[in-house]
Length: 110
View 1 (cartoon, rainbow, N blue to C red):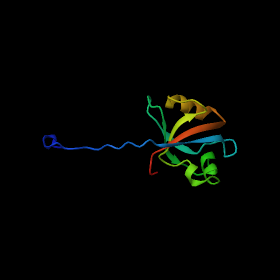
View 2: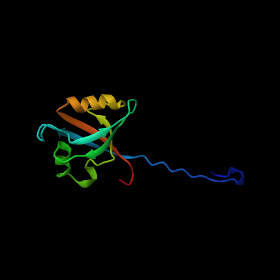
View 3: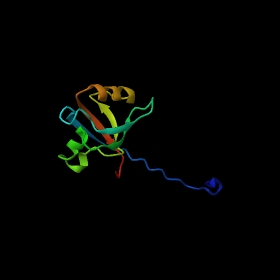
């Protein structure tokens, strides 16, 4: 614990994650699977990308795009086809849509 009696000082630095768009990601050509392991909490506004799996649409896309715009483990999906604010609704969109436009946030240093 900090001893505030000595006039201690704390500096907090908050960095906004970098966000980028992925347009027209289609799961039809890759065995009908996005190939991602995701997670979210019921009241969350983002979907956490736990892992990119081999063989799905995301892995296929990652092989042909610049590394800075590849989907990576630890990224956060913040919008799916314009649906945002509810991870549950975004998850439903991922399950039902044959193609998606995503907005992805990546924590700094990842």
